[in-house]
Length: 514
Image (cartoon, rainbow, N blue to C red):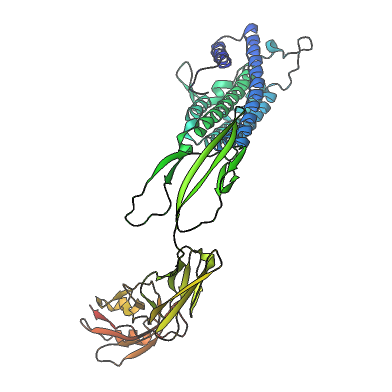
């Protein structure tokens, strides 16, 4: 793995890299060309071996994911992403190697490439380079490398893969390279331009080897670290095991806290106790007896190394009397408001919500866990009746009376501001007249339908709607600094409330002209 002890195969590969680099600086004699061919053969053999080994490791990881699940599932998913990215890049490099070998024939006697005859650079030079830049194919090569790195970086987002990513990004760093004279040269120019075909072929095979090594490192890391994670204490749960499950006020609470973990794939030879085995654990299923302290006991039975093992357990719980009263409460106040969906929580202690029935004029279900809305109509009181069906089929009931109040009168507002305001008449001309109810328990919205507009010394103007009209603007044209315009008789309706609900006129609002 990256950052760990090098395997003999990797040591060999590193040595070949050193030889490869040294040869690049030498004159391309026949012997050098043959040496490049030998290096290419070694890389090809290493790639074939890595492909087989990686496939076997991935199969092992998939098996672990299907059997043990847990961290192995996520590790396998990461490994498959890396395998897909590697194959895509590996196959693309294969097309580049085919370009290098275009027009080259295998030696019939040796069955190998004619290394000493592969001293030309024409194929890649013509395909990748044009002047000082890259051809379309050359740009495609660069883009493919960047795409491969991007896919690997996306797949290996977990920081535990950082050493592998760092090594990969360093090997495929496409930055310009300084030559022996200190001049910066483009990446492909430095590594391929003008080089003999066999040297370029060996370099491309080395690319494939780099990709296969990264793939191998990832799968090895995923396999090993998933196993470590599964054994980690983070996979355990802290379980509170009290001596009993019900305590009276003032009674000492005793018990213990333990670490626990269960395997859904565990195989038991048997179970004794008030329940059944299900997914590696016992699901308790029993009936509460008489009032008072009760005991649950039994044992897990399993085989370990061919020997039967019995693991006993014991726990306590307390049975309390059946409930005989309901819990009925208004979530926001002790009264309910006419014309509003007053939220309420209705329940019976010890009885599930699906076995509780509530009724009242205007009462509707508003979700699970005993949530209701009460929208009362006429009258001054409303009675909520509740009944609950217990597990033995018996029914208990209760009721509660709530006072019904009307929504209080809102306050008039100019531009959302209540009380006395000061400002230029131009602002008043464009301001919206509204009705608000600050500090109310409910967030209500009112729509102004009519108001009276009064300018000192002029007749009052009744306006339909919520905006100053042309008459009002004409009246404003004759006001002077210090005049107070009064907006009163503000009528409105509740948005989202009962259609026939009558809302009191909003309190007047005064605007002083500046």
